[in-house]
Length: 420
Image 1 (cartoon, rainbow, N blue to C red):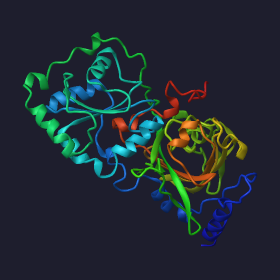
Image 2 (image 1 turned 90 degrees about the vertical axis):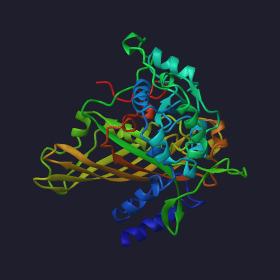
Image 3 (image 1 turned 45 degrees about the vertical axis):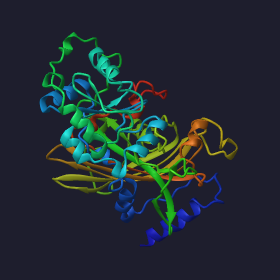
Image 4 (image 1 turned 120 degrees about the vertical axis):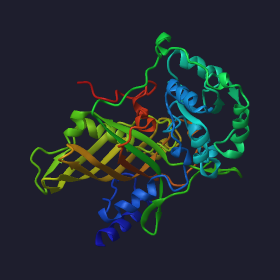
């Protein structure tokens, strides 16, 4: 209880309007506040129902499934990133505008359509690219088509029954040979100009979420911010997500060879760099590149070690990007942030695997990437609070294998994996 009171008092001081920006200190997160913060940061119930649709991310696989089930394809595309993760600022805001809340009926879509989500930069081999161009699947767009490449419906559709029922009837009126045509052998296609990166063999995948926070009675709480908040038809900013990939040697380096309760170790610099610079930044505007760390620490403390498991607590802090300078407040490339994190890593000795990787972080951010960003989400706080929550990915779905944003080819930051 005392630690929570201290946390509340320090938060009030750290994020107060008159606080000196020369003091880069964020209080430690009380362990008994961990679960509440995680719930506050992750997507809220009903917020992003598009996440519940079983999307494919490969054109050929989706077309084959559409033929097998005799269903139309609903194709969700975005530029500069997967539509199922963080992407270009305009795509991010439009996804929040058109594909959240009751505008999406995931059960109806999953029952009647085959979902295909594509990063416009990674549409596949020559056959797959031709198909996408034929059905106008590109940019920030939702299209409906047959597996053979016939366009269905009209522009401006939503992922809900009242928009898609007419499309479904149109599809069912087509002759079977148009609905389920034979596909060309992909062996005859030209390879993709940009191959989709694959997760490292036997590696570890962590999903991160990011949202805005505010002070509420001395505690960090979720903040309701808006895109184009001055407009009468403003819409809420949506929780963003991204992924972190660790190689097998990297995640194994997190497990002590001879664990003793109370023993401490530093997390490898390469892991710290990748975690803080890509997943612990504030990326609510979508397409923002990683930030270099000016200062970073991350330690693991053994809390339990027996024949069944090793449980470690993760504590860390980082200062990223540019130092805060109010003179640069409206200048491009002035982004910076600082963040405090707390987490727990569980290693199962029998499975010889990490079975829990949960991290929560509270930070503050400042600056902008470019002038256009100020038109997306306008915040009254400066600097503003944000939070991250991370969890282990254990599934094998296409959504679980989306490449991390800062691994993709158009990212201008240093290599994602350090060269050996």
